Image 1 (cartoon, rainbow, N blue to C red):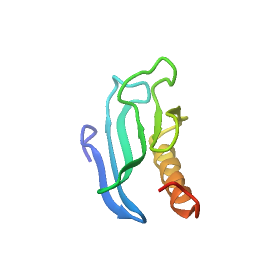
Image 2 (image 1 turned 180 degrees about the vertical axis):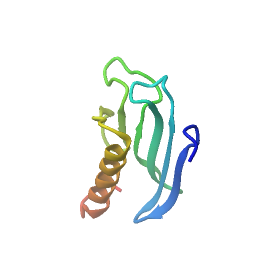
Image 3 (image 1 turned 60 degrees about the vertical axis):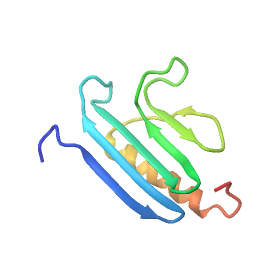
Image 4 (image 1 turned 30 degrees about the horizontal axis):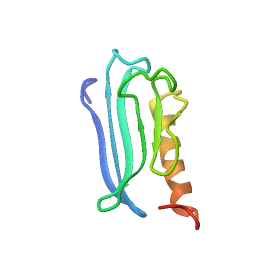
Amino acid sequence: MSENQPIELNRAVPGGRVELFAIRDDEYPSGWFYRFQYYHPEEGEFLRYDNAHADDDLGWHHRHVRFGEDTEVPFQNLVSHVALFFQEIAELTDTEHSNL
């Protein structure tokens, strides 16, 4: 795989869809530009991780949730970040009283 080739995934998961996009980019502190989102096509976005821009309060790595406040999310490496994202989706879809 070429170093400039993006990593992409678009799949159905319980309760909606997941889209992942990441590409090597030295302009970003992690060396990656990325956006991950979990959404329902009719109801909209539930969860998104991205590093589209630096934020004075949140730093570079952002976690956006439909029913809550945007927060900073720790970034160790891309694989760990994807795993954390999927873990959070699993928790959201497994919560009987979630707002989804």
